[in-house]
Image 1: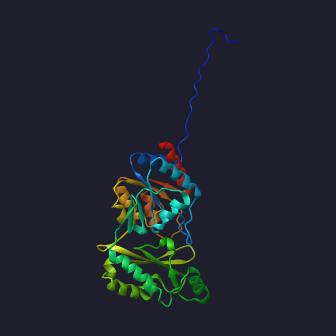
Image 2: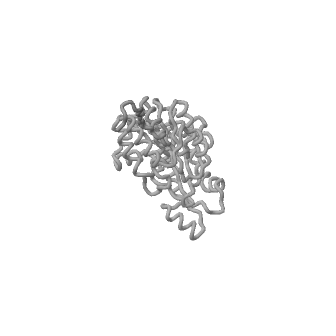
Length: 318
């Protein structure tokens, strides 16, 4: 038995919380901005959807849907920024039950969707020009109706051919065509010899200047040797980008993106006092992602980590 006057130490137990990991820090940052009235803007190509899902849209991870739904049920407006056409919004709503009521940027910045209303940034003549391009290139001797045909001619017979880009990337103001990118011609030769003569004629017929009103480029993806001809528009000689569209938005936003085609959008996001979450892992060939990721407030390893961060943000807001 202890003696009556024996000293007995008092032990006080305290719980020491482990430091937050990166996705928890990210979730807290997102929650703080959303609590201040920000919208959530998700990159549609590489963050929400796989950039190489050529045949049909495919999620980067199914884990991202539940936290988006939770945030929407908490009153957060969620939108998408993408090079794909407006049908992608309908797809996300119909296929996964998302609301997608936040401002969205589609067709690589040519169209802004706000409160369900679509505003076109390019000139009306540009949409007529794009429709004419699709009709005229159907008659081109190297035109094929499908990507499988293009690959067969290129790989088996060593012939150049092209086809319309996937339906996801087609819009009223933006068109794309695909070709197999392993031939002897470089990008400049393909553009100047195959496409430019037709595009110049159609631009003139529609009252557009080839240099001042059109943004025509050839790019490549590392998946399947896919070459992409993109036909977009300009405003006062400046190429239309997601950043161009973002300047038409009113409320600030939290942007989660991988960086491919997102540098201009990131600049406007910072100007509007929004937050930028970088997400690594894009398969596209570009020098943009490193620059973009360096400008981000926090960088996550992949879309799955973003899903965890959004879940944590929802928990903070509940």
